[in-house]
Length: 165
Image (cartoon, rainbow, N blue to C red; front, side, top):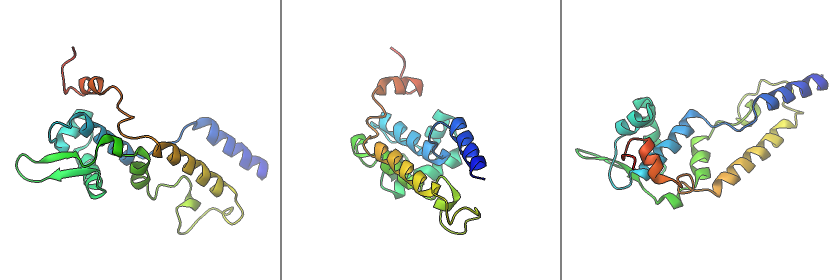
């Protein structure tokens, strides 16, 4: 049984050579990046969703989360919109992802609650995955939103915010 388990684990590792974040976290980072390159004005969730060709409802949910967590300032009313609540160099990518990924642990036994896996009481994968996950976040804790946008003008061009030239 151990040989089969090792083969299965090797297959998982071979086919998935990278860490993966949820779509929610991906959208959160995209929203923050958009707000960084449009820091001179307020923008709406609709504008962001149109710019990235994402569902408005998903973007609205993400912006509400970012506002609740203090990363985004929402200005209500006519002419309202969104802007960053902190400077880009004060927003740690790791801190954003830790909050956005809460409850999205790598395997069932790390999520808490009822575990269906028969090996859970004796399995050593959970601490290994926890260590790898912590290393992933520790690396991202050292990087900021400003680090993610070293070519701000080119990002603005790609998003259609400014004309090339």
